[in-house]
Length: 198
Image 1 (cartoon, rainbow, N blue to C red):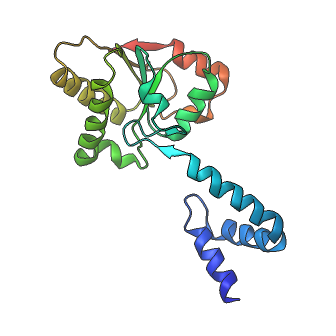
Image 2 (cartoon, one colour; image 1 turned 45 degrees about the horizontal axis):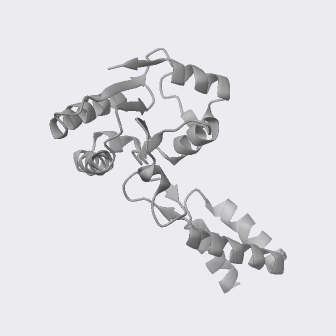
């Protein structure tokens, strides 16, 4: 079953799919081949319509990133794409930008090269958006997060000395290492309403 093993290995290479899940998917694909080929064709077409922004690290479907071009005074800085989806779904009627730190591993918080690249991305976004006045860090309360907030705050004040940004963060007392993507709507509201100025 050489081709089946190749299919399993290819599926296993996808992010978040382990060997057992890859095996189950491969079996499902083969058992319902015609139906799944149609689905894969549709997925392929959809993937060609979705883009990933190199600045804010979110998704867009037009020629330009909707998030980057949005006129808003507020920008939420999130740790990853799961937080992005949760906030967008929970606050559909509000106007705000999201900047994804795109942290995939805990040690990204303390990697200077990585942080410098993130600061350069944020600088690009802020230079092209003079409307932004408030920068809110929606990162889990932790020592690492505090370090990131202070570094970003210091760097942004240095880069934009004439802009008077208001910085805020999630208040201490909110569960340490909380993951925004797992919060229910009441807890999300509590987190958003209980931010503190820096």
